[in-house]
Each structure stands twice: as structure tokens, then as C-alpha cells.
Amino acid sequence: MQNKNKTQAELELVGTLKMLAEAYEEVSVLKMQKVRGSVLTTRDFLDGLSSVFIDVKRNYGHRIQKLMKNKGSVATFTTRANNGKNLSVLLSANSKFYGDIIRRVFDTFIKDIQKKNTDVLIVGKMGKEFMEGSKLKRNYFYFDLSDGEVTVDDLKPIVDTLVQYETVNVYYGRFSNMVNQIPTLTNVSGHEILDTKEATQDDVVQYAFEPSLDKILTFFENQVFVSLFKQTINEGELARLASRIRAMEEALGNIEEIEPRIIREGRIYRKSQQNKKQLDMLTSVYFLKNNR
Image 1 (tube, rainbow, N blue to C red):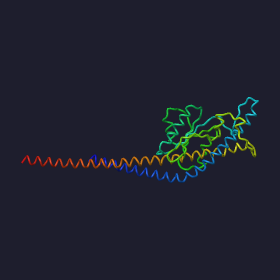
Image 2: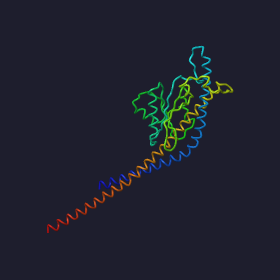
Image 3: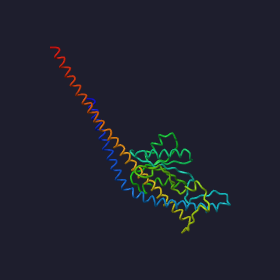
Image 4: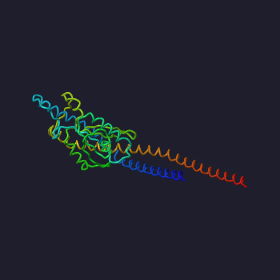
């Protein structure tokens, strides 16, 4: 009876897991259909805008370098008041069942910040959980954020912290296709080239700035900065949804393999019980005949 009850309990558990996996997958597919087009279209636009942002900053930096050349001062490549520090941001999630993308992003993040002099900001409960479980003991800012679609108003508390820093690097999952989601590092403050290579006249793309270079850079550092960060949030959501769909597909595949095995084992058990009953009956008949 115990084995029979155990088989029934296992079948009920597998059935429940199957329904959950199908529900998670269906909801993720619906959400993905809603956000995929807009995210990928906006990606192309903002990738180009980010490149212009870098060029604008390099123009500004080159001009400041020329002004400071004979003064022995350190050039500043920003019009924003900031603390001159670097900030590394981890975008994770509040809930689980997103496959391995969040863990892989965190592994990339933790490996990098161990080697950098940077402050840390974590978005999402999963990232906080991973950080608390890591061997790296470092103070960090933490913000909660919905896993679904977010608005600029939702991001305001986070952005208010980001704008205090000169350089902001964001670690997140980037959608490549339904099979591959890539841990990615992007800079939303326009510093990629400036961090690795000193700007020279030959490197700088020449622009005619109207009304002025200072005002154009100020616009980029306030408006475009927020747009680039919001895009990384949306990219992260798209990658998580794709990773969840893949994870649920794998789970359903495993369930499809496990369920028949449980049923088969249940049949074997019932057959063994029937054989045992028949053997007991034959044994009883044998003893009755011999004891007459």
C-alpha cells in the first residue's frame, strides 16, 4: 500500500509541476511577444545613439585636454557634477525560474568587480541573494524593481544614485536568440573609449555642435543617459523571458521522460503484488491438501 500511495503522490507532483511549467512558459511567451519587437528595434537606435554619445564625449574631452595642456590639471570629461567614482550595476530579478542567465550574469559581474576599484549597486532580490552568498564582502546599494515592464518613474530612485557617479557600468543579460542569452557589460555614461585610450585629434569624429558642445553633452548626460539605462532594463527582461521559456521547455522534456517511468514502475509494482497474492493462494491450497 505504501508503494502504491507513493506512486500516486509522485504522479500528482509531476502533474502539478507540468501544469506550472506550461503556465510559466505560456505567460513568458505572451510577454515576450509583447516586448521583443520594441526592444530589438530600440536596441539598434540606442546602439547608434550610444556611439554618438561617445563621440560627443570624446570631442568634449579633447577640447578640455587642449585647455588644460599648459595648466597641469586633470581633465574632466563630463558636464555633470559627480563624485568622480566608478559604479558597477548588476541587473538581476525578483523571482526565480529564469534558467541560468541571472547566475551567469552574476558570475561575470563578481569576477570583474573583484579586480576593480568600484562601488556596487544591485537591482533585484536574486542578485542580492547571490551577493550575500558570495565570498566577496563589500558594501553595496540595493534597489528592488519589478520583473515586468518599468517606467522612467519606476527607475527614478535608481537613476538618482547613478547620476552621482562619473562612470556607470551595467551588467545584464542580452537576448541573442531563443537559445542564447549573453551576459553583457555596457557603459551608459559614454566612457568605453576614454577608459582604454586617450583621445587624440585623429580619433575624434568632427561634429558641428549647435547650440554648443557643452549643452549637447549636458543633454546626452541627462536625457540619453536615462534612455540607455532603461534600455538595459528592457534588454534584461527580454533575456530573462527567453531563458525562462528555454528552462520550462527543458523541464517539460524531463517531465515527459519521468512520467512514463513512474507509471511503468507502478505497473511493475501492481504486477508483483498480484503475483505475490497468487503465490500466497497456491501456498495456502498446497498446505490445505497436505494437512487433510
